Length: 209
Image (cartoon, rainbow, N blue to C red; front, side, top):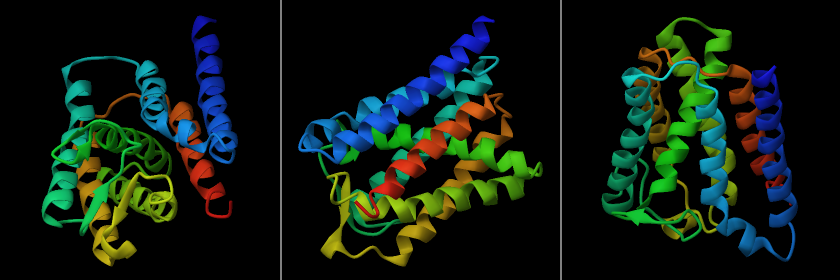
């Protein structure tokens, strides 16, 4: 009974923040709502972590793989123009280390965990599942790139997004998925679907608003 209640509360929180964010970012209070992006990312990840069935060292290692792999890839991109191209982060993703907001590393963990659940729903083979998960993340990045400069998340040099960025996203996400999925973390797949859908819907709306 308590598990069902926690599940319903989690779903409510996920969509409360998503809908509030859509309304807030569309209003005159846009800057304030965008400054809360780190809180929203942490909350979304917390909803996923809260429903992991069994915690052990393997789970921690699995979650840290996309976090640190994402950080390394982003640091190489921001400082040397490698992997994703030449770009810089704005201020709305919070505290940075070597030019990389730690929240973007949280985002890598969140996206890998949720897209892994979605991809494993369709295919069981770990390699094919990793390909599908990486494809989902790359597709999401296509949507994210449209609003990123407007929201002061990040912006590419001269405002041009190179094809290198999408190739880099796919390859990095694929490697992160292989590492993460190897440990077979038992998450709540319905929670992951809701988190991922809320992210997609949020940014898809701002393709047109």
